[in-house]
Length: 465
Image (cartoon, rainbow, N blue to C red):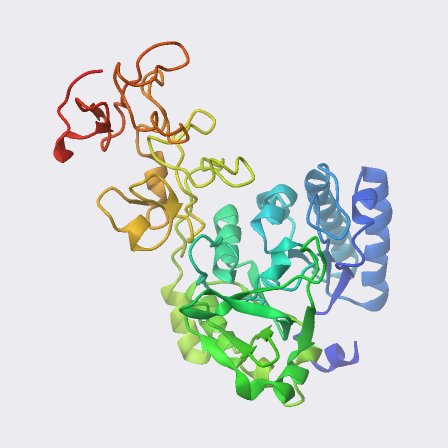
């Protein structure tokens, strides 16, 4: 409060919640009466101590927190913000002072989508502080095995890894749901995460992505933790390398089998450029006291950037992301079915009656390759038959999105001897009829004399089954 009094242009918020203090939110927001008690106490603190606003750090509504929430959390969170805004408006009438509301937002889409109704929340909130860090860490789960920086700016992982484990993917997710960018603050960590007992790289051409060996038989515990920048800077700074793809520094201590991912001035400056180029609202830091005594990291976060920053912000006033044109999911994931995960195209099994596409927001799996699987790189994105949904999400709507007739062909998950086959010499379908080729598939709509589906360009005569 003393610092704020010396700098009246600063806004001082009262924050509630956090990773270890969010277990009561589901109960306290479950109905109007309970929310009223909570809001009354929050507003009372703001009025008594002269705060400028309140930050709700619910980690997390519905799912993903230390304690799992309920399905009603998503709706109740909106009700909390609406009623809190109403009470703060009444306080404003009394004090002639405006009050702000913000909240901490999850980075992972698997937590964000079920728990946060962003469109409704932002009707009552002034901005969201996105916790865009901790994508990688020595977690007590199978995912804790994978090394990496806590907050990579861009996707740069080896093939077959998720393309959503990076800051850009999270910023795009928020922006596309909100259809705006100026109320989004990018979170940056002033700390690193480390692993011990680390093995060889996943990809021999890239030193950063490795797997750690578990310390238990279940493979869910790993030796590691976090380290503040002020400690890391004194201990390991001279050993650091910079990954140009991810825009993130890391340290590999081969003799100790220890990996450290962290942030430094170079990575933070890359994020400042990104914020300006994408017209984001600003930056949130966790946490300022992790910086060194010289304020090295803080000095690198000149988000305004002087005249250069203004030019970038002005030039990027146009919405900077290409968003999916649909709200529902039309692609197979491992959670849906491990055997169908990644299948795409006209030969793939239907998903909810639709031909499956690839997730345009996952750069690791945004392209449908010629063999009917989602992936990245030239093999999946640059061939004549390839479809790059990341570059042009509107291709999701290209007709036909559903079969134009009854499915009378074997799809991609069929066993050998049936998959891609057609005609009377091939094992019949379940109803006893001979399989045909999909007339919607430009690459495999013709049945050859040998009983294979293809197209005439490849020498398949257009014979009927």
